[in-house]
Image (cartoon, rainbow, N blue to C red; front, side):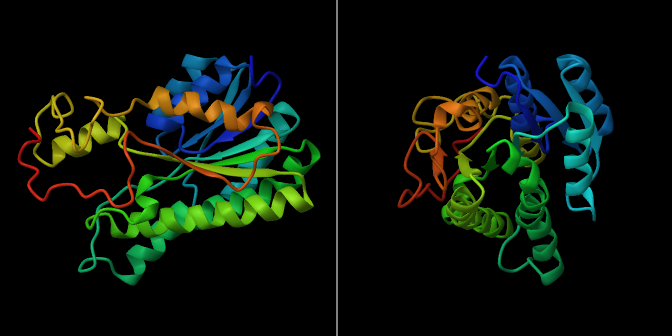
Length: 263
């Protein structure tokens, strides 16, 4: 029970990586504030892990006052707050030709600014318990694919924020801030996105080595397992660190232009 007695906010925890993180946190002894846009999915997760272990907040993370409401819900329900997992994000394709000011601002609001505002709001509570923040980024933060321009910019900003706050907050408040950058993960939404792109139901089963040297891509549960170290006391005073969770080095690795081998 590596998180026994801890209270943790996990944003975007109704599906995918966030859901896997919330479930693993509870399995490790924590109480969790679930959050997401899909109320019915959030209630399903709440039922699965037990109302005695979690509470669900249904709201857009970028809505005015959402960070304050999440923190207050944690404190009012469980009496304290030990950690924040900034997982909620908008993953959407865009490129230099179709990314306008309004679109870029919206994705920055959700993926970069909202995590900062939640950290800011949670800081007084985290300070009381020498707590921590874990930002869930993406390997796309390093440069990203040409059709993930705005998303990649937002994750690059999140990574710089982690480095900056990781140094500043541990010094002044005793609060650690770290980040993991997942690679290609087989979430429910990733399955649907690729189907929408015209790929088959089994597109992930025989990916070329350039995309999956290990023969498959990552599972959400594997990301969640790595998260526990950063939320637990096992990671000690480590702060301001970014760890890539991928099968191969991202910087300098170029995928082939011909993706016809992905069925």
